[in-house]
Image 1: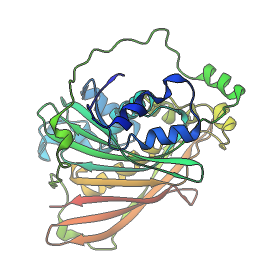
Image 2: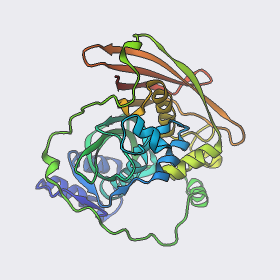
Image 3: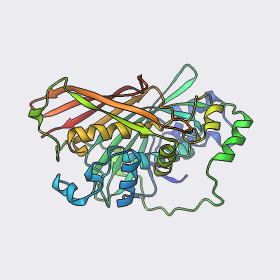
Image 4: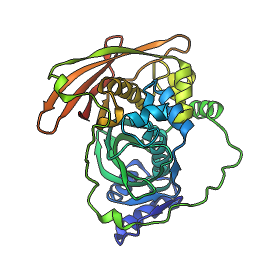
Length: 364
């Protein structure tokens, strides 16, 4: 196991971790094993160091030109110590943590049988240049519905100063023990990245940690460089912004985020799994929306929670450009706390891509 796991006394969990050593499991056995792991916690065994170019690569991938990601002087002028990362930058770390979760702990699901449905990001402080991020991972809940397994995972992310940075909740739908067409497997082998030798990564994080038993970190929002609360009104609409997406955008994001799923860059694989074409990453569209909100708010660090329900994919042609329109309005304002809720709407050709999307913001 490549992650540092919490030592638990629960024999059911121990049995669950070893349950599939004897061979392939049925869907029911995978579900039983996964249900026994609810509450299990571990820490990814290597920290993620945030670099200047990684911040900029991600900002470019989600088409966010806000100066706090690009210019130290501009970031300091808004109250930051240095460059900060975009709200959805955590997807880079989150994909690493989730991949290890489904490879090492919650086994029995193939990567292409896992679909993200909801994402909730709770910000304790901005991710910034030089952070060494450590990720505690847990399975929060599990249930079965109509033959599918519904899981919610939680990541609590800390920096090298033992300060909480972010708490994320990811809801996925997964199907176990699914027979995969051999032609699809062959095609996957032809388009996915190949590595001759998987390198060994040294462990830099050693747990388990006492913080596993503590309550979740509290949220203490700061406005940073956000606009003045008194200039806003309930029902005020955000300017509509159109974001273009080509296959090049999807390939670039796949590389930046470390997401190898070929439905985002191979029209052949997308067709074989029943899609009308390649589709944008859910976190990519979430990042595009965050760019629109951040520009309106004045400082993306003033967003202290951002949550999205993904309902419809964004299709991108193999040749040509897709366009996604983002807008929204101020849903509520609280004069006592000077906080507000922004409801975001994203559409492609008039079709909504989010079932629900909103940002909670601390204004000045």
